[in-house]
Amino acid sequence: MTTRTNMAPAQKLHLDRAARNAGEAFAFDEPDATPGTSRSYGSSLIWLGMAAVALAGLSLVF
Image 1 (cartoon, helix red, strand yellow):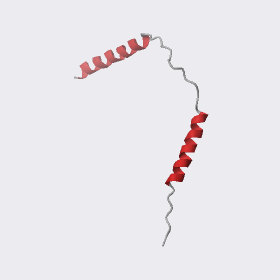
Image 2: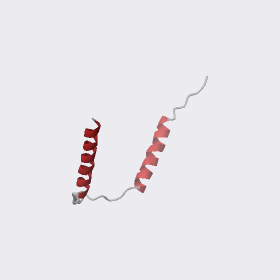
Image 3: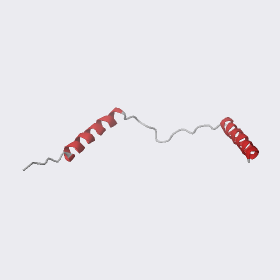
Image 4: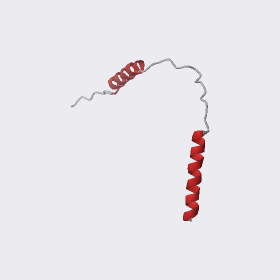
């Protein structure tokens, strides 16, 4: 007769401890509210220009 051991509880305990230790290493204080970023229109104009070129190219193909 063979004996069967269940390693799941020991493995879970080990993984929980490792996760807790890793979490402590990466823990830092976060502000509750992030400051708002000012949005520039330069990148939006670039994307709109690329879309216009793509639509013009598609109209020539079809």
